[in-house]
Image (cartoon, rainbow, N blue to C red; front, side):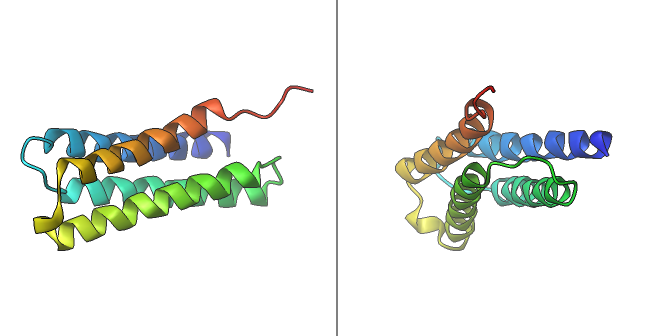
Length: 117
């Protein structure tokens, strides 16, 4: 099971990386490429599956962290979908907001650790 969770974590991080790379690649001509939403779908989906497996295996989960990361991920995904539907509204500030959400989510994953006993 640890191998499966490890593979899912890799997919989760790759989803964030694809979304971030696609945004940075389109910063000069502001637009939200389809790769952004696809990367975010992968990241959110893998994160939900990881959480489900961890909950089923009764691992010690930090539900506050999971909830905050889920809210940030959903907001980023909605922004990406709206950005694709209304490309005339996209500015560099909009893309910078998406970058901020992605970096925040990854930073929360890496930096928010449980206190050592």
